Image (cartoon, rainbow, N blue to C red; front, top):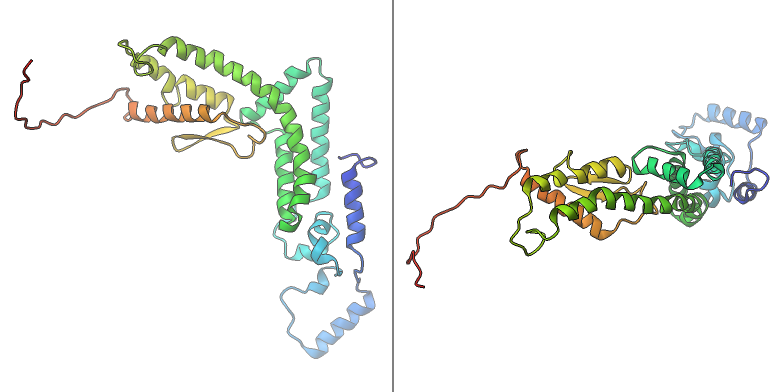
Length: 293
């Protein structure tokens, strides 16, 4: 995409830039002098924004204006724009960084391990070129407006989404294995066959339950904040996927329900910071206090 000689994106955008400027009229020096003289003689009230001073106007500006602005060809739209930081050149520079990064992964002695390390930086909430560039491409797509939304998504977002999914999927499988070993296996050892997790006369240990579900220091929350803080975060007492960094990553709904149920249980068990459940008994009158056998 970023190769000047071979990129279909660059070739397409150059064609759009050429065709989109069809019919634009540029004001010459003599025209500008005559207009200024007329304004002085006529003493007309000048508008706050002088559209003629902002650049050439053309019949295709209304249609191709957003793309021309992205290419730096439509100076007129910059007058009304609050954010001129988005540009095709910046996007291509970021794409080049991503390409070089992925080339390093592909040429490593152990590409699989390096790919997992790259994905892990996102899982842990550390920024990487791939996700930053994806966000930048999403901003460009949104800036083009509704009429160009399909074009923007196809050209600037989907290629990075596909690259991210290629990195993500193998690493997600490795993370599932780590969750099973460090949390699920220990949970099953501690609570399988014990009440209230099973119909049994043997009760689960409350201190052991606290080892898993306690906020901040429990095994489950430690794992989530250490390994998944970049793609999963808390809103109140509920764990929810991050809408940006979790692109291409599908959380198991049963997993989310389970950790949120345990989070609610933690709120009940540790209301005042110490573990336990308190009850209040209220006496009521009863006609008979004994029962015939």
